[in-house]
Image 1 (cartoon, rainbow, N blue to C red):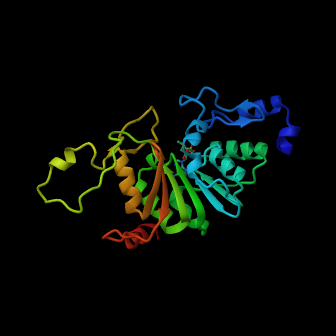
Image 2 (cartoon, rainbow, N blue to C red):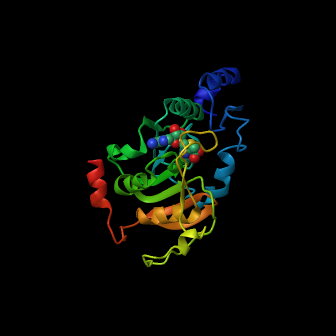
Image 3 (cartoon, rainbow, N blue to C red):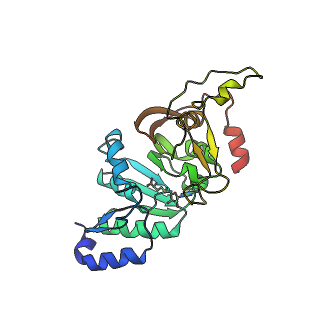
Length: 257
Ligand SMILES: C[S@@+](CC[C@H](N)C(=O)[O-])C[C@H]1O[C@@H](n2cnc3c(N)ncnc32)[C@H](O)[C@@H]1O
């Protein structure tokens, strides 16, 4: 129990949790659940338990960046594994306020910043482990975001998760196609990204939903080698030198300078 947890009564915590609005992360703060009626169940704990063993158990001496940290569930887990430094960013002040409170109650020393994934270059730092969980499909420019992670912040491991729809198959895409080829594009296993012009799950911030082959292809194309797939939507990746036939770095610098 953290010092703050000891000082605050359950009623104090419950009141503050309510004041902080609706929670997406169901955390247990001194016995108070922050989102007990989450539509995905005990989220994200149920997801975490399906891939937690795929991430180093001992993070002592390591730095972690949690992108789209929300109320800080994963950041707190990383501190509990001994991470020396955890930086957590999000663009929503409501979630950052929740995360700051949750970290305090949990006694976790985490640096929170209101920063978009598109501006990770401003951190001027590479991290041993970068978490990019549940953010990709909220972006209008998801490939740009992956390229920025590669260019600026991932030193070694990237843990990436996305909502996926369509085929769950992986696909080894042939190196080239004839100009008149069409059939392959009708194959549901081919890398596909579904564009949400209106709404998905009544959330106006959902834009692009890839199938599995597409998410994998985007990760590889942005310079990440896929090491593992411990959970349907989760990929453990390692930073690699770009091998794409067209190196995007020049274009990326033109866009972002
Ligand atoms: C579905 S939640 C995922 C939260 C958490 N990473 C998880 O996996 O449980 C998406 C989070 O990404 C944040 N987000 C959306 N756009 C972002 C952006 N451009 N940069 C950083 N965070 C963003 C949202 O505010 C929200 O907290």
